[in-house]
Image (cartoon, rainbow, N blue to C red; front, side, top):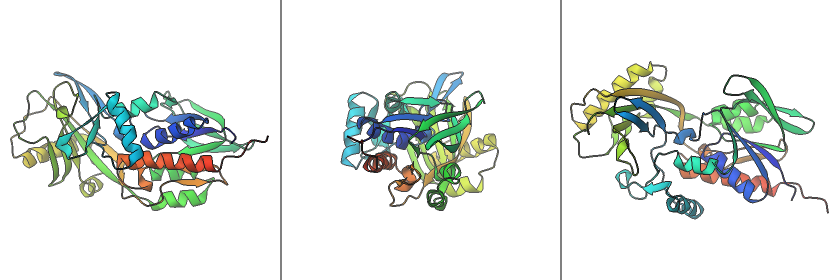
Length: 325
């Protein structure tokens, strides 16, 4: 099999899973992510507060395990101290330690990842792919050549990048729709006096959790409050500070307590938080040499992103040219 140099756009769970499988087979991989560091939708926000630094897992809250191969991966994370069970979220729930993005960082550390690199488009030249985009400082740049490109970002963004080169892939991505999510982050001087660490489906809240109660967490009392997709969609363009106020009030109502004034309060808008999923697994075109992976091709779970990336890597390798003897 000829060894390929593959560019992967998006260094979240799906992109890194794809990279790991390709590298294991001897291929070369370069990853590009517009974020400042590892995380994607498993990001952790750090904030300075009068109480010290506070950490908020403001994306995915936990993950579950069903697939045997993913189970083996989680076992390795557990043995390495970067993942632990979190019974408060339910039987079989796991989190990254000491922050949710710890597992993503563990994966990213094993690869060539350019963070702060925003891919805007693809350029086909000389029979190879080049990425066009801008670095963290806003400098327009281009990099390549690559034998193939993997796009591991939400479907709406993936469609925009591949549309000029593979209409079939773009059409499939456009048919998918991600649901938005407003997420509130609050730090308090004292522990909130309530017996539970999690809240599900209460009023406009889809999920809320005492973030500081997760395994390995340090710092002040922190809560993450995520609005349901319907409310988030209806208020997607609202001011972040106003949304934070609403989510804080909703938390007090859900917990049936008078919530004190937080030491810090903020809200983050995830435009592309969750997809309903499909049964496609991954997308690969041997004609254009472009692939797409992500949880939206299977279902809205962290594990599905990992499986999708692994599935795409297998498809790429199955179609890799054979070396001439």
